[in-house]
Amino acid sequence: MNDQELLARKIVSIRNSQDMSQLELAQKANIERTALNKIEKGTRKISSDELKRIALALHQSSDDLLNINNHVKTTNTVTESSEYDLNRMIDNARFFDGKPIDDHDKDLVRGILKRIYNEK
Image (tube, rainbow, N blue to C red; front, top):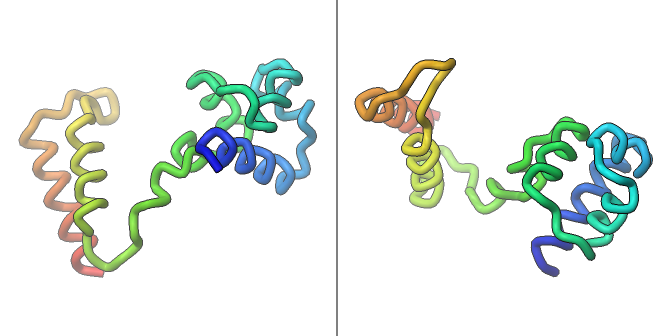
């Protein structure tokens, strides 16, 4: 099963768990019902804008719908793969609460989070 089909199944599953019809989701996400139908069947690719609107309508994050964090193990320490993910997110951060983040601040955040996860 490819990523597009996995995403389609996840959208349908979450929509059904919320007792939401396809038409309701289409309306909440401001997407044509026929387009949503094809997305849910896995026969049409989803744009990033559509993904964002569907995620918001389902009260989910786009990352959760795409299973981006699915490969990261939950352990008491920061693993090599999760450290990479953490470092990548911190490195890509440019602002926090509207204020610029410099490299020194990024290193502070990285150190704090590593200590938190190592203490658990």
